[in-house]
Length: 512
Ligand code: G4P
Image (cartoon, rainbow, N blue to C red):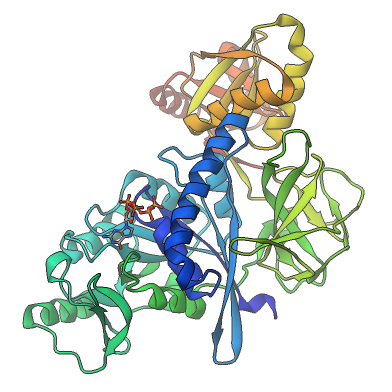
């Protein structure tokens, strides 16, 4: 198997749009879970998920982004799908964003009744930053929804993206009679009491005139599918379906196999690293503390960028400088963790370690490559850390170092004053932080409001920077790399400074 047969992707959606249901159906199609156990597995999976979250919160373990791998045959070729799960909370965190740096494409799930929701939009913007190509799945057509044209136009207008419908619902909700696939002209029909798709495809469908007209309009009224525009992130093919009733799932998976890009070259200091580079390289996009609080071991998730990995191989982490042997790598199959013997570009490998591997680290055989593009995001919540026991300064410092390296929080050291300021993108990150501080570092701390609403990394020539510094010292801090950060009291404050200081750049993301 080669890197070309890999499809590494994530599902982006707003909570409740159906990501979990669709994930289960995709895994089912790929044979990773079995039909007979589905109902039970579903109940268990849900319970497992909520238990896991409870444990995560109790123990303060950072929120999981797991990896699910499944395969499907296409004319003798096996395609391996690596689906990276992005945590589905109302609240999102930097984990989610970083996960998106490790994929080559994404599926955007939209609820047919609700259209684009805030979180879909945020995640979409992250994909756009990296020109990640997107396939759109408009879910829940078995329910009453909006006019499909309205949803298509909303995607096109709100996201400034060409839409190219590939299928059409023959009615929705009570009138739902199946899904017309434009390429084959067949209609997938609902069957049985639960009106599911059980494999019945109508080759010569009789479609009521009003729906036939709609479908006709949808085909002539929007751009044709253009693989290049899709891969550049300028156009999205759109599939209608119902994850719950299994409509559109096969079409979606086949579209990923046929059109989604195999591993893409990844940005590095010295240009892009292509998947066929004759050396194993990869980067850590996620570090997860292990379930067992007595062992400080962690699993680092590496997105492999090039080469063929073999178990036992020596790789050098950029943060360490000396090689480590990777003798118990983990590949993530749906439910079980399996020991991997080999892995290709595009695969995700879990590497157990004791804190030697950090988010943003590059791993490679020759220790020459450094991947870039794993961003820090301007925090949207800033807090002062107030120690309850002032003798614990050292422990606090250690915890801040560790947890910021792991990507749980960002830490800022104000130019004036002693209290550290921590920044996060989502509220949940704060809870995880306080919990882990207490459980793992035995440090009790209170978080107090900081008089800042957000932060921007500042760049410019030395003189302009020095001038800015002398005027704004109370609002300046350094991040843990020592880079200068403007702490803003409000978004207005940011705009004001941007206008007043045209010679400086104020950036909402920072690449390591
Ligand atoms: P999420 O991961 O994006 O948050 O969504 P999830 O799959 O958990 O789905 C959210 C709710 O929407 C679930 O209902 C799920 O059954 C339902 N759903 C998902 N896809 C479809 C679909 O195609 N059609 C219809 N009609 N419903 C769909 P719930 O009542 O919250 O959960 P449950 O009682 O089914 O467990």
